[in-house]
Amino acid sequence: MHRAPLPHRVFLHGAGRRGIAAWPSQDPESGTFLSFPPDSSISAQADALVASERDRKPNLFAHSIGAVTAVRALADGLRVSGLVLVEPALYDIARGAAPIERHIAVVTEARARAADDDLYGFWSILRPLMFGGPATRERWEDERAVAQRWATTNLPWGHGIRTRSLHGVPMLVVTGGWNEEYELIGRRLVDVGAHHVVLSGFAHRPQDHPDFPAAVAAFERSLAI
Image (cartoon, helix red, strand yellow):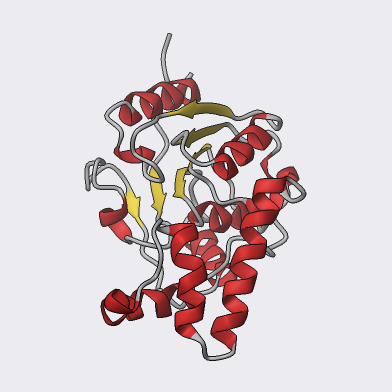
């Protein structure tokens, strides 16, 4: 049986590392590694993605909030050969589930503190949720810049993401088995046809798991048949 050539890979980062740094286990020559400006909106990122990939159907990889950009781009007309969603922060598709609503409520409370110019109050709420361990005055000067960035970064909900944009799209979803929010989102994606793989031991970065390349290779073989 002859196989079609594998589609071009495009990699989207999450809220932390950007470009190739977000995917260190991947060969830098294996695809296009996009890097969006830190202050760019989800809609601006989706527009840039649609424009850059208008003439081809890539296999699109997206980590965390990068999945929001990816699905928004699909809703805006981007055509893809497949999606590899790693710990996708698609909170909009899992609204109503208790872990999802709890997370949103805590972040909303923290953002309200930041809006009132209480950055330390913001960090005292967000740090335990996102990074573990309490905020302390002893560490505050070292962590202030990180707190400021998280107080202004894009939120992964409120973008009108709906699963109807994913119908008929081949999907591999990879989660780390450490956080019920991402596992819930993974199960919602299974409901619309995704294949879900759990790679434990690397928390929010299962793309660093040694079995990640094999999972991707199996998925891409299915696209090439």
